[in-house]
Image (cartoon, rainbow, N blue to C red; front, side, top):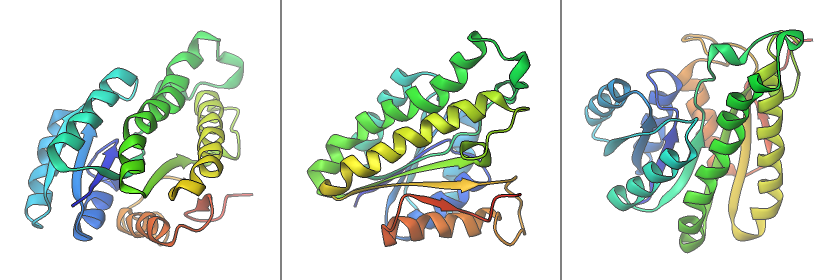
Length: 221
């Protein structure tokens, strides 16, 4: 059995993707700074006979992410799929003219240093397996900057650039890297942005291994 590792585990998209990948036979490593979320999700997944464990880490702390992913692989088995989709902090979204250089430290740690630490932690195991998938989930500001949300606009774009470089560099090693852009809010019951719909989309991206950038729905004009 291999492991699906989810960085940014929560009760919406996180639970839906954990359930979808768990139903396909993967153990599930849930990574979040909220132990309350981890305990709740583990119980929910156990009801579906999915093997899951929680590992506390903060997306702003690369060292804690590395430790959590190593612990997850030791406890559950090699990580074949990594999904990086923590929810950005509200204070990352200041208007561009109110954003100082220091204001970009946390968004860039969250969206660049965090992903780099996670990839470096799981890539050796994927190479040993001979396969792997790295999934990055971002909002629409990754490709359409919003001057009212400067931090995420800058940091998501940087994350996308990093992921795109990985896509090209790792393709010869059978490690597929993809980005899913979700332009608006995740809304239960919505045609394109319901958590279960998005979870199926992410699983399909993993299985099809086709292309780098995918959109949950078209970007607004």
